[in-house]
Image 1 (cartoon, rainbow, N blue to C red):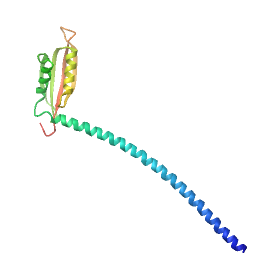
Image 2 (cartoon, rainbow, N blue to C red):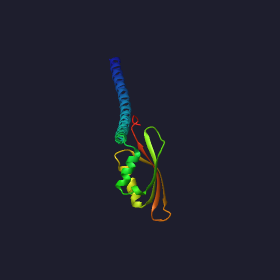
Image 3 (cartoon, rainbow, N blue to C red):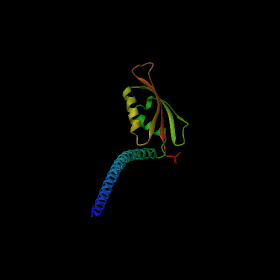
Image 4 (cartoon, one colour):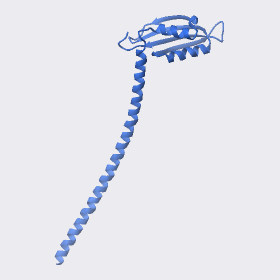
Length: 166
């Protein structure tokens, strides 16, 4: 009988050891799974953030593409004439000349004389507020020789058009 008890005790001890070992393995696995879950949650948060940034950029690109397509076949100098006439500085536009540029861009150099700072600010505001994509590429301002409170303004402006429109 002692042999039988020893055998039963041995089986119980083996079962207890197997249970403890199984418990330890499950504990380690659950810790590993929790770490992996945390890693996946961080990756998901990053992907969500990047996805939001991508959507924002895509909407900006769509807006720029819409603005570039809005020229309706009009040229850059037509828009410049409209802008300068609308703020009353058409007579202060000393020169305007087209400059060679990329195939989807029309570029011009403009020179204004005897502008007030308010007129220059209005000019820049109107250029930015156009429904077409006008970009100011270069600006040089200097005081007028005969009236130092007025400025001379040289600038390069470009009209971006869709790639299929030249």
